[in-house]
Image (tube, rainbow, N blue to C red; front, side, top):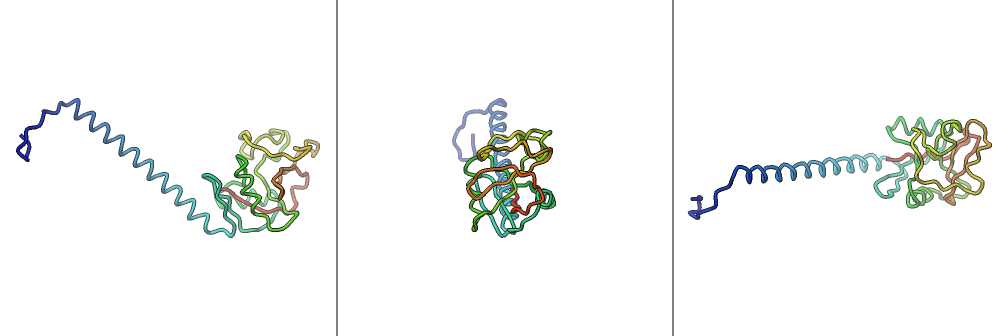
Length: 173
């Protein structure tokens, strides 16, 4: 007999185990949701410290609107514990082009700059590129051993042998 005076059917150990299993699965689901929320909040908290912020899907592109060489761009993003921007789809590529408020501006893109290490088909960590938006005649493999990839204001990518050029530095979170 239950405390309310009503008779309840007896719960078997198997039923109790099944309920406990469902409860633990629910706790695991809530824990994963909480971790995802914490991660999103951390991203947002970091993003608001920059002058330029664009969200595209689950990614934020951030910049202090500074320019530098390709190696300075890689170094700056690494020092922030971030990676140089690399669009993974058209939406992200378009988000990066919103950075431009003047003509003839370029942004460094996280494509491997060593021709021998992937012929401009991998990022700096040698992961294959799932999306590219090369302009006509690009990637220009005649640049020699090293070439750095830039995104132009019209949204196309091009390889330049002049990795010391000043282009905008945009990192991704």
